[in-house]
Image 1 (cartoon, rainbow over the protein chains, first blue to last red):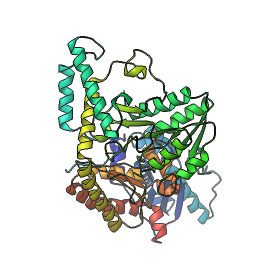
Image 2 (image 1 turned 30 degrees about the vertical axis):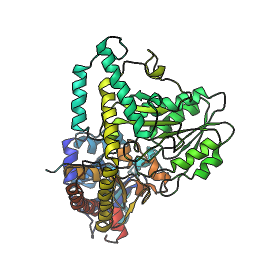
Image 3 (image 1 turned 180 degrees about the vertical axis):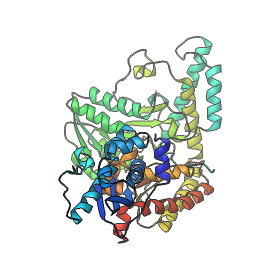
Image 4 (image 1 turned 180 degrees about the horizontal axis):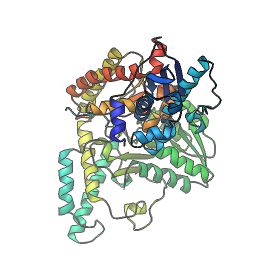
Length: 143
Length: 391
């Protein structure tokens, strides 16, 4: 059902945990849907120097969270903002179709953390399109 | 690595002696049961024997047993058949919110045909109240369908009482006994059952073979057109080997039911006690006592079921969950929602179902592996750390 890469990131998730001195934190998803993801970022000189996540969700939700932290670490804020949910899924060699739907929201979580960082630092956020993936797929009771 | 199979409500291992007998009959008794020569008649006698064996399992006469291709086919055939045969009397059917999809989806199909279906609620343990059933009956009601025992949470329904209500009002009573047959005693006469569905693979018989009980005089219909096999109710050359396996499984289940039930119930209760003791914030779903001897179903807070199943699988344990991810839809199990669980708790359910092959060691192994797996997922879960203010 899952690719070897998904299983690897699910069973050995990278950067899992919480961060005390974060620069930004973002939460996406909804426990009602069965997926909720929280991302902490540490930003220094416009670069994401550290990143941590916590996820309540299925194998795909955990694997995509892990993958997005790996992809984002060391990137500039601008480059990190270019990451999409699709790119995360592709980096994992794909996800089963039903998982593309609801459990693939890691890039949204990263964006939410970046928005939080920018707001805290008085930086403009109007260039960031912050859709909650879960909700625009009208998944269960998100509305 | 140890392999522990705890998903016997999904399907069971075929008894090796049954598998052997089935293989042998495929090469020895390959005649068509409808043929008049000896090879055909030998095959027919296999069907006759199995019909008696299945009848004995549920206290029905062999002539009231029709072989099918399994549980979903049986449910669909009976509901559709009765609905169409009695349409002139009325177009109302009563069932429950926690039936198997074979019932619920057939009911949806009937609703599209103009039938009205009442889906009765259940209590927190998954039981339907016979008084609620009685209150739902209208002059239009032609059929009541209530499962004997639930496939997810194992709750055993008050079938005899519901049967009595149906009898009193002259309404036909069907029960989906797919999870109960071969596990707990069923007596269609004492239970006032007019129609019943069962399938072999839930009690160590083969997949793809089941049977329905149709009380003499009750009209139904066929889903398959063709020859006149099974009294014209199920056309097509009979699956002789499968039916032989079903009959043998019925004999085995009946002969060993008391002993197996006692042993499996003890292991079930040990498993329930162990999970309650070793893992915090869990909830046993289903009825504490009126439940199938082999069913354990827990909600484990702050985690999601699919991740749990994947990690258990890595430890060699096969189990099941009612989470959305494993139900193939975006919503968690309709059964867990119907007993009143909030979505987020329904997502974290774990079903462990035992069989006569389950050993004490299997239970010990599960109880050793499960707590650290739950802990690992909880450490990853933002819901858990938020609850315990560890951010």
